[in-house]
Each structure stands twice: as C-alpha cells, then as structure tokens.
Amino acid sequence: MQRVSRIKKYLPYGHQWIDQEDVRAVVKILRSEWLTQGPLVEEFENAVAKYCGARYALAVSSGTAALHVAYFAAGIQKGDEVIMSPLTFAATANTAVFLGAKPVFADIKEDTLNIDPAEAEKRITKKTKVIMAVDFAGRPCEYKELSRIARKHKLVLMADAAHSLGATYKGKKVGQLADITTLSFHPVKAITTGEGGMVLTNNRKFAEKARRFRNHGIERKPGKRGWYYEIAEPGLNYRITDIQCALGLSQLKKLNGFLRRRRELARQYRGLLKGVKRLILPTVAREAQSAWHLYPVQIAKGAARRKEVFDKLRQQGIGVQVHYMPLHLHPFYKRKFGYKRGDFPNAERYYDRALSIPLFPAMTNLQQKHVVQALINLL
Image (cartoon, rainbow, N blue to C red; front, side, top):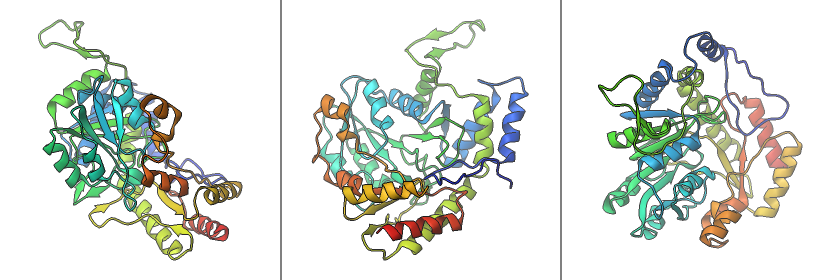
C-alpha cells in the first residue's frame, strides 16, 4: 500500500496515513454530481454505526460540533451541570458552556488517567443532567460503574471518544457503551476526514434531535410541498461534505490495521522503556483494550524536569506534546466558575509530569528506537 504523505525530518507526536486509495476516493467525488449533502454522508454514517455497534450515527463537521450536537440532543440548557474530567481538550467543556451549562469537574484516577467514578458521584446535585466520560489517550473509562451511577441518578451518560474509536471495554466497542458517544476525525485521530466528527446513539429521540440541530433546526413534514420546511428549534450548519465522507469510508477500511500498529508500538514502547528510572509508563487495562491514540509517559521529578526534557527533545526534532493542561487551571474556568490549583490533585500531578511521545501507524521501528534512545539519554 503506497502512502502519499511523507514524514519529514521532524517527527510529530501524531500523523495521518493517506494512501493512493484515499486519494482516488476523494477525486472520484470531486468529479461527481454531489460534493455535499449527498449519498456518501449516509453511507459513511451507516458504516461507522455498524463498526461500533450503534443504531444511529450522525456525521458532522468536527469533533467539537459532535459534542455541541450531542449536548443539545441530551437536552442540556442554561443552569444544568455536566460532570467531567478536567483532563481533556477544551471542546468537551466549552460546548457545554455555550449551551449555558456548568462543567463540574471530578478528579481522575492516577492509574487510568480517566474520571474516577466515585469522585463523579460525589459531585451530583439536583442540577446535574449529564456525566461525560472522556476516554483519555484511547483508554475507555469504567463504563460499568459510570452506567450504574447514571441509572441510579437518572442521568444521561455521554462518552467523548475522540481518542478511542476502535477501543473495547469488556468486549464491547466504544460507541455502544454510553447513551450518546462522540467521535473526532481530525488528522491525528484513529481515522481522518480532514476535519469531522460523529454522534452515535441507540436512542431514537436523541438521534432525531441531533439530526435537526446539525441542519439549522430544519424539519420537513411528510405530505408537504418539496420546498416546505419548519424550524421548531434553533440549529446550526454542522453538515459534513461527501468529499470528507469519501475519505472517511476509505480510512475506515484501514482502521483495524491502524489499531494493530498502534497497539504494537505501545507494546514495544513498554518493552523498551520498562525499568527506566524517573519515567512512569501508562498502565495497561485488563478489562479494556485501548486504541492508543497517545502514549503518555510521566517524568517523575515534575514540571521543571519535564520542561527540560520537552525542550531538548523538540530541539532534536522529536515532536513531543503535553496533553493536557487541566481545564480548571485555564483563566476562563477560574474566573467564571471559581476553580483553582489544588482542586483536583491527581489531574494536576499528572499534568506537571506529562509528556506524550510520538505514536502513529506510519511510525517505523527505527523512528521509535530513536525516540526511546533520545528520551533515555535525557533521564
């Protein structure tokens, strides 16, 4: 399989895989009658729904759009609260804020780096409507316990699975573990459509509401004239194009291969870095199979040492990254909701030591050994 894109001298932490099959799929659509709102959108939705084991799928323009649509479908509105991990990208919280909700953070477990179900339950109030489970780095959350808590308190369980397409928990694929799941198809994710996202659910009402919101809130009535439509509630243009869906369908055929390579690289990292002093490796779950979107290590001596290692690896052309500064430490969330350093010690401790090292399907074993040797030399 010949790849089109080439990794240059700089080795990024993540990178898309684009081959001639992908190019042909996109060119075919560019030469067709449909560039957007055509048949490939539904075909892509059906293919992802089948892969994940979900009843309904809605493709949208980005992972952020998917979150916004999903919160709206779940009925999030002004005054509601959404419980989530602070260790996530800003979109998980920002989209809830745009609907008038308050993100209520609950600390992570140090071994999984995912939300601690016990901490989540402590933060439930009369205003809580959603528990948002973020599958950090590709590792599924503890869905059995989170589902029990959500049912007990009559809450909607959502999954931000931007990192975990293809991962499994207790034998079930991500996409069927929560009431609503969102995916991202950004270039560094499991598969890419350039930009893009998807909402998955088994709930017909959620799916119908999401579909309307994706297209300006438009609803067409059976039996009415072809031009006639109604707007029962506001929506936005979060539509995805057939061009993107053509790429997505082509990528989806390769997803299992991508996952095998990611898991192989993760196993090799563990073998190559095991026993290295002052380095904490991500744990491996027994009940779940990670998609390994990231390989997050921790520099045991803390933030100052981490910064030194980060800077020197970047100088050597190794594109390490830090995922993420916990949301409660950002100025907006401090100012708006009163969060402060010390509120979530596990997330903060992880952030101070975190370093995501390169991992993506096109990465070679030689490149991986180069990363490992460079890292060991600095510790």
